[in-house]
Image: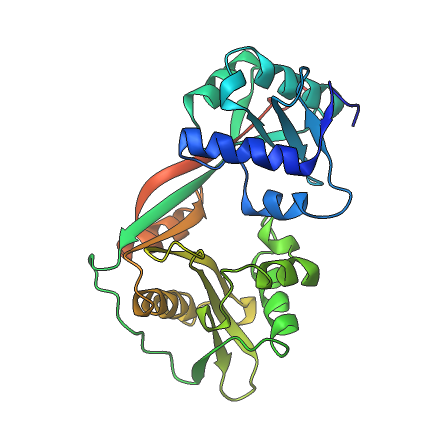
Amino acid sequence: MRQHGRVLTPTQFLAIADRAAAADGVDPLSETTRLSLRRDGASVVGAPRGEAGGAFVADDGSVELCVDPDMRRRGLGSAIAAEVLAQHPGSKFWAHANLPAAQALSRSLQLTVVRSLWRMGRPVDGEPAVTAPVLPDGFTARPFEVGRDEDAWLAVNSAAFVHHPEQGRMTRADLAERMAEPWFDPNGLLLIQDSSTGALAASHWTKVEAGQRDEGEVYVVAVAPAYQGRGLGRAVTALGLEHLKSVGVQEISLYVEGDNTAAVATYSRLGFTRTGIDVMYALPSGAH
């Protein structure tokens, strides 16, 4: 990509993102982007004037952009976004929480919403009550074992999310990065296996950020296609919720595609309500 202004170092860009998160109450960068910025060779396109902001363009064309809170209302966000579009017309911009500034920027560049990601949540002590599930006959549950289950988990995850733009592309290196994070707990990655074959049938990866014990997350729920339709999705979801309750969190959150009506309905029945939204913007089809 042709540089626009200066190129920030990943460390500088992360510092700007941290300041923006503190000012807005919303992190402008996803976990995936933050991990990517730690890798050797990561680059960030900077704002026209100094270390005021920048954008990270992922391999799939998704973009996350932020401007230092002290440098806003000067057209820097629009300038960075316009440069990204000039070089990568198919780029798609994430707007976490779809804040008013992101909406204004999208209007100025005539971008339209192409994807929405709902954040849903529920209190642990809400209704329906979080209880340990009864597994379907022929299945058993156990926690993830480091050094044993990585390949099997990746295979199920890839098959379950074959059409998902991010989750289905997770590699062994991606998994290792997340397992190296301070929040990773193998006891919070619950597996359901076929008792007769030992095959991994479903999993529920929960997440509790280090130092934030009041809230837990339904991080990834996956059911192998060969085992779908047997009630394992609901069972493994309940298994993870019960685990989060057992470690003492007060609130449980998750992210789900806004147009996945079946998943939204399932989580709604489990007591989750929408608490926020991330939106992806792009140029209208044919306008590239």
